[in-house]
Length: 202
Ligand SMILES: [Zn+2]
Image (cartoon, rainbow, N blue to C red; front, top):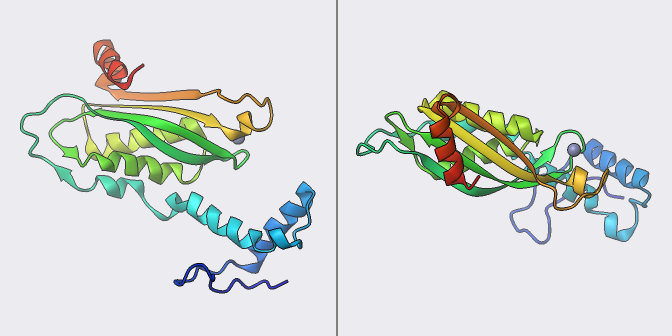
């Protein structure tokens, strides 16, 4: 079996090579699961799986806070909540390396500056594309926005299903886990918190 991954026929630009030891590890896992890594359908699987994992974990190659480095200070006196909701994301749980699929709502109450709205989703993806637990993902997104944007308040609510729970273990498809982190005025003032949660649909 060839252990070197050459340029892919389907992609004229070629694909990055995958080291032998990484492919061997995936072959070992296939064998452990009960299949023959040498059979035709699985021959190229180790390299594909390895590249897929690089993509699932692209967040390790970035500092999500860089997305918040460009701020706009001319907000025309806008001093209400900014909310981005139903942001889809995918992550992988650090306990089973199984998919976490969900959506997030991210809100902040600006002090004197705002960011481009797509940046909030980029911060989420930067932290989601790592091995995670949902609680930490929620906290990391909120803390990053709090630290770099210094708003009057931040609220992050994440709702997700965990394949380690839906496809194995207790096998309960449809179960959603909800986590939230509220900071600043959304934590200290119950009316602000109610307002933001209502806007988010909770
Ligand atoms: Zn898990």
